[in-house]
Amino acid sequence: MDAKPKKSILFVCLGNICRSPLAEGVFAAVLEEKRLSEHFELDSAGTGGWHAGSAPDPRSVAIAASHGIDISGQKARKVNADDFSRFDLILAMDRSNVEELQRLAPAAARERIHLFLEFADGNVRDVPDPYYGGPDGFAAVYRMIRDASDVLSSRLAERMSVSRSGHASSTM
Ligand code: 4NP
Image 1: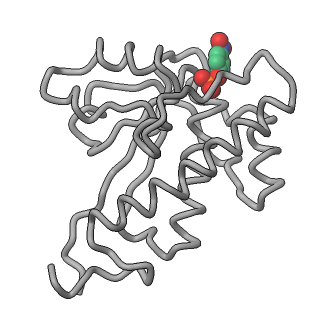
Image 2 (image 1 turned 180 degrees about the vertical axis):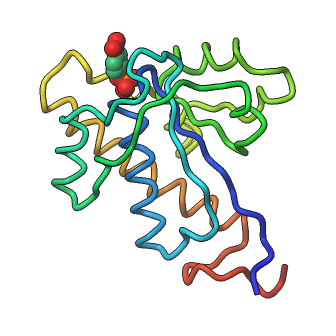
């Protein structure tokens, strides 16, 4: 029996075609590996809407695929007002995304907005925008997201009292 509410996480970047779809896909894969998927709801969005409806950038699709993760079915969308009540955590890829989200969010939701890497491991760093760079940028972004997802998924699972087997703790 598992009556625990799911933790919902929205990953946010600027365009929702490079970093945040990768973060959603990688975090989902890490949860799957740890048998924690049933405890989480994930989505991603962009603060800008220019790419709404588009699949992720082919370079993000490729780096994910090279690690066995399929993000090709995702569709970009813009952050909307409902997101600030729907999601427990809103994790932004860089500090300009955090600023834009803080500007858009109602006061009550502001504490749910965090810089992704800082929230994962305490170090204040951006996931840099790889859009105008080459494939090395996407590999670096993948690695940062992967490491952060490993740490964050373990920390959240501990805080939610769900064991590595994915079942709710009997002491809760
Ligand atoms: P993302 O990358 O924010 O990681 O999805 C970008 C994608 C598109 C643009 C900028 C960043 N753009 O300016 O179109």
